[in-house]
Each structure stands twice: as C-alpha cells, then as structure tokens.
Length: 420
Image (cartoon, rainbow, N blue to C red):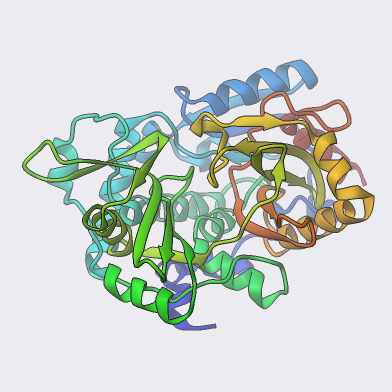
C-alpha cells in the first residue's frame, strides 16, 4: 500500500495499530471478563436526531436499559473524562457530532495544525472563532475530519484507562470509514467490488485531460473525508462535442466579495465551463477523491441503490433509495422504495450474493459492531458495487428486521454476543 493511502492514520499512532487497544473493549464473548450492566454511555449531541431516536428505540425495546449522554461540547472543553464516567460493564457508543455549530467550531480548531502542514485549505483559530452560523455553508472538509480524528484519539486515550467495558465502534474504525480513498483501496485489495479509483488531481484541467485520454465520460468528484453527499460532483464529459455538465450538491454564491460554497438539498446543474471549473477545483484543491462513474439500475422511472446495515457480521436492515438523478441520499428529498420490488428484480440468488458481499466488506472493519453500506446495482442487474461504508450509517427510520429497528437490534445482538 502506498504511503499516501495512510496519510490520515499516520498522524495518530495510538489508532493505527489495533493491538494498542485493550481487548476488554471487544464484543467477542470470549474476551468480555464482566457482566453487562445494561447501561449505554452515549457520546453525542442532545440537539441531534440520533440521540433522540436511539433513546426512544431503547426505551421501547429494552426498558431495563439506561442511557447516559456525554455531550461533545462538554467533552471537548475537558469538562468530562470518560475514565470518570464509564463503569465496569458499560457499553460505550460514539455518535457523530450533529446539529451543533459550536461543537463543529471546536473540531475545526483541533484540525488546523494538521491541515496547515498538509497545505490544504484551512481556517485559523481566530477565523473559526469569528464565524457566525451560516446555514449550509461548506467549511474546510479536511480540517473538520482531521480535527475529529484528534477528538477520537483523545477518546481512545481515555478509554484505555477506563474500567472494562464494551464498544459499539472502535475509534480507529471510525477514522478509517471516513476516508473514502482508504476504503476504496481496502475493498479493491480484498476483492470487494467498488468503483474504479482514479488518480488524484489538484487542478481541473489535468482531470479533464485524464478523462479524455482514458475515454471516461463520467466521474464522481468527492471530498476524500466528506459525508452526507456534501461536496459531491457528478462530472460528465462529451468528447465528441467538447461539452461538460456537472451536477452537484454544491451551490455557488457569487453575491459577495468572495465566492462562497453551500450545500443544497436540491441538485444544482452547471453547464458553463467556468462554473464547473470553479466547483471542481474547490473540491480537488481540498483533498478530492475521484471515482469512475458506476451506472445504477432503475425501479420504474427512478434510479435506485441500497443502504444495508450489517450488525454483528450479518446483513440485516435494508433501505431502498429512489431518485431521478444519481445521488440517492434520502436527506436530499429523495424517496424510499419497497424492498420487495427490488427482491423481485434481483431474485434470491443475486440478493444472497449481495448480502454475502456486504458481510465480507463489513468484516474488513472487524472492530465495528455495525456499519451501513451503500450498494449500487448495475442496470442489467449483473453486478453490484460498494460506494461507501459508513460508521454512522445505522440511522434508518421505520425500517425493521425481524421486528426490530437498527438500534434495538444492536442491543439485542450485544446481549446475545455476551451470553454465548
């Protein structure tokens, strides 16, 4: 593996090697030397959907369990130390910090020294502190990620000194799943289907030349460490007419002294070459990740893909995501489909093949008790591919497997793992 593929993990030696973490964290029954006390320590934000849904789910399905929230804001300000909170037999859950701008600012500040050294776009502590909330504005992708890696390193250091406990997700697995280039290489090396990874470029013209020379008419340009479709660009090239088209969640605001970029739930269409160049360079010059486009199958008149959640090594809950365009994320006002319609198209053999492939992909992240995989299926149903694996990909509202939602299924499987 090339050194630059490890560029994130090298900053955090504690998280680089699994052996540096105590085996007492494992959810393997043979390695848990304690009785679960039916308490979840939840690192998250009270302002977000995830804490609300997790709490509601567990209260309904496991009323004898309790949940203790550790707010990111307090944790980042050193007001809480996990060593003082986690008791023997607790289960620790790390969730993404969501819907809290002040927490994001603290994370950006932590990421500044790393990204400054790398040479990517970044904002100083003074600039971050001066920011006012501006809904949808895209701030330095890489800086947030590197700051969050630093947060997870702090989490891991504290966990190493805690009483024996169990984890839903090891911190280093979260770091790995947030790195699209790392995951693509890992899947490729282990014969897990994934879109073709294209070389990195810092400039639009170099990317366009490469696409022309290699007869590639469609590429996905993404932030290497982004999430929730933020900053994604679908770039189409017509070599016969020398015309370009870009579809993106990026909205470009030219009304100020400087151009600002925003996330927009409505897909933006760009057909002017100068605008396409601006948004592509914006992503490329901030650690862009580029893949060859993978066409998706249709249900009726809509494209679709799947979000499949693997829990304890088994593919379970499945969401069908429908869209009139290639980005199917549900928060982009797209639609849900009926899994039975997909099953009719696939048949049992192909569906079992996809499930087995999901379980193989998830097994490459052996210290993640659950993960969400985004799966694309080719138009002729002959093949599938994994666009991403998501450490925080288990929030699937109203989708059940064996009568349980994702959160209650996770608790049930932890109980079973411990009892075996």
